[in-house]
Amino acid sequence: QLDAFLSMKKKEKDRETEAQVIKIIIDSREGNSQVVKELSLMPNVKLELTNLDCGDFVVSDRVGIERKEAKDFVTSIIDGRLFKQIKDLSSVYPKPILLIEGFDIFAVSGVNPNAIRGALASIVTDFNIPIIWSRNGKESALLIYAIANREQRELKRCVVIRSTKAPLLTYEIQEYILAGIPFIDRRRAKALLMHFKTLQNIFNAPEEELAKIPGIGPKIAKKIREIATAIYSPEGEEKNR
Image (cartoon, rainbow, N blue to C red; front, side, top):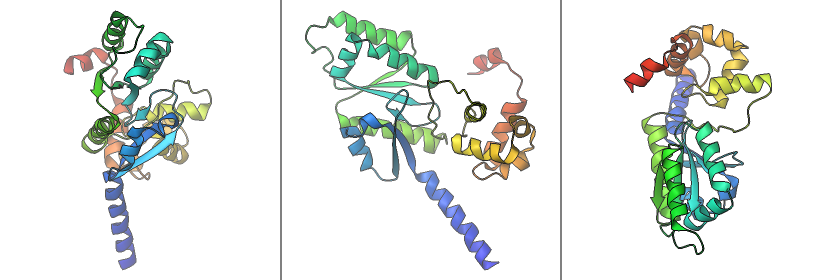
């Protein structure tokens, strides 16, 4: 009984420690940037480098961040990269953010300032993407950390990579559907599917059974049941925002 008690306490402590860690997923092309170097020096931050379909930093299931240095922002307008990147980001993350590093966006020679202003206006009004500014890599890192901290520690949201590529295989679609539920990442989605086998079984399962799955617990189990049984009413939800 003592061993079981100590084992339970260790698991509780591990969960508490894991909850304190802020996870930030970073596109591999950002690996050598000053931003990543600054983030790596911060306590309780876990960085994961991978190839992202869109965005440079993922800090939750709904927030993806595209970072542009001032000069690159302007050149990406000229070569046509910017709006594709912005469109992709806004299509997969409910709360996309554009982070522009440096304030000298009008210093690039040969570019009409009105074209730059027009691009900024389009990003904000056409794509509903907020723009935040920083002076350098260190300040960018602090901003990214602050957003990640709010999403993960304060709002208890998990980190989920979203892809511009539509899932094709059945198991990918099943995982994708579950990962759309708040607090469920791909790891939890796989655990649910491995246990219940089908989406139908998951959505029909009582909260007590869902809560028994590792990584789920009562809170996420309740959210699954809420989503599974809620009546579709977009008009009502919009009014309550």
